[in-house]
Each structure stands twice: as C-alpha cells, then as structure tokens.
Image 1 (cartoon, rainbow, N blue to C red):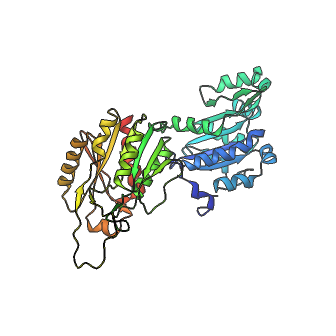
Image 2: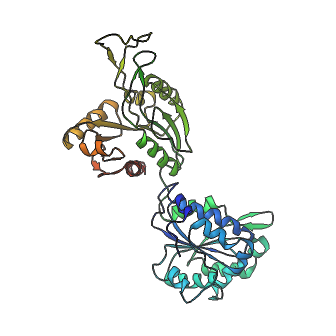
Length: 410
C-alpha cells in the first residue's frame, strides 16, 4: 500500500513533472542488475511518476525488498494474496506502463508462453492481456541472449511489447543504464522536452545601486520566479547559466552561476556571455531603471533634506539581439495598477523595442499580489496571441512559462 507521508516522496517532481499522474509498475527479475532498479525507480519518481515495485523471489535474494520500499514509498509485492495485487496493478487501465528491469531470459520465456507462476510473471500476464504497454529491459549473458529459443520468444513478442536493447560488452548483454531508460520512457509518452541540450542564459534577482559607499537603492524582487524558472529549465535538460543578483531565495542546483550586484555588472556579464553561442536568453531580473549619481564619500546624516540625482540606466534587454541576433529572447514587463489591455499594450511596446520573441507581463500593484507575493498571475504576450496563466504559485507560473517556450521551440 502507498504511504502518502513517506519521507522519500519528497523527491517526487524534483527534476520535472513530465510523468506526473503516471502509474508505473516496475518488475524486478533475478539478475545482478537488480540493484540498478532502485536508481531507475528514483529517476522515474523525480520526474513525477508513482512507482510500484514487484520483485521476484530471485531478485529479493539479491536486493532486500525494504530497499524498494525505501526507494518508492510504496509496499513491495513479493507474493500474491487475496488482495489480488496482480489485478489491482495490471488490469484494464490500472497502470500506464509495466517495466521489467532487469528482464531475464526466464521472465521473457514465461511471458511469451503464458506461464504465470511468480508475482512478476502473473502481473505481466494480466498486463499483457489487458493491453497495458510493457517495456522489457533485457539483461543476461551474451550466449543466452543469442540462444535461438530466446530469439524465438523475442520474435513472438516484438510487435506486442517493447524491448529496450541491452549493452553488449564483456560477454554479457547488460541492462541499459537507468538514465537511458528514463529518456526512452519520456520519449514514449511524448514528453521529452524541446529544451533538452539547449544553452540558456537567465538573469534573475534584483540589482543594487549605491547612493554612497554605505547606502543603496534596490527593489523588492525576491528572485523566486527566476529561481523557479532555472529549476524548470534544468529539469527539462537545458544547460543553464544563471546571472544572479540579490535575492531572498537560494538558486537551484545544476546551474552555472555568475553572481552580480549592480545593473552595470549584470550588463557586463551578459555581454561577455553572449560572446558564446546561446539558444535562449531569459531576462527575468528586476534591474533598476534609474541609478544614483553616486557620492564618493558617505553622505552626512545631519542634513534636514537631501536630494539624490538619478540617471536613466540602459535597458539590458534592448542590447541582447545586437550581441546575438538569432537568439530566442524572453523578456519580462511589470506594471502596477493597469488594466489587462494596458498591460498587454505595455508588453507589446517592450517587445517592439527589444525585438523580444515573447514578453511575460504582470501587474504587481494589485492588492492580491501585495497580500501574497508568493503567488502571481501573468500574461504571455506572443507575436500572434496572448495567453493568461490565472492566479497560482510562482513555481507553477515558472512551469507555465517554460511549457510555452517549449511549444514555441517545438
């Protein structure tokens, strides 16, 4: 049974949500590669899947069932009972995919010949009959893999189930690496991101501008949206360089990062980075529009009144296409207290000025946003349409934005 509060479930969705809502049955047969099934289960979960393990008796002698319970947060099926576990997992529509990792010649032969004398073979028999997709990742000695009986069984099943080819090395047909199997599963469900392998330059956080050596002006950006965007990009397989200003949250793991303070520093880093080839630039940082004419010495606190002169700062986004003309450019536009139509018009004006491909616009002046700045709503202004997100957490806003970029790239 599932333990909804199991600590291991904290990893679900940590690398992406492509498999969210998918129920995957992971059958583990008695091969020494059984230990790798733990890693595969965790990878599937990190991309959102609910994973249920069924282990053969031979597999439990190699890897204790408790390891699979720890890995998935779900009880491991090692024998069938009056609870009809095979029906609950593999009857019509009960699961989205049955995987056998590793799959032995014995397991293959039983499925091909309708033998169901173990929990694994019985689950496979029910799933085979109910039409649930089956993915078999073979692992055995090369001589067994070349056996004519094994070949005959594979031939019989080849148009009925799917095989993931083993790696032939050192006289063995070794089980494919878990990362390769995960990629295949994502491709199978049509969920492999168009962002995989893309080089992305992302600015996030706020900038700090000095009035004098000790005083500054800045803004209230937390960096939360930028951090969430970076995490979503990493989950999608993008190679992310994060230009990180001041923020109230930690940047995600898996990014290459350059820390900056002022708008000038951010501009300098962006310009230097764009001497390299990038596929996408996302300008999510809240950069100061005006910067003080800085005093070289500390301003005395004895004055009754003080005037600070501000000068307009260059808009970094307006230079991006000059530095790299073919890059896909995403900009942000924040307004306060405007109508929906006014927000869209402001976004289109910024799009024209910067030659951005899309602009993400939002109204940060609404009472609802001020009351709960962890949530937001945005409109994505594209060349030919406007798409609204609705009110949601900033993490989901980031996912909404990334999914739109994926569609554009696809």
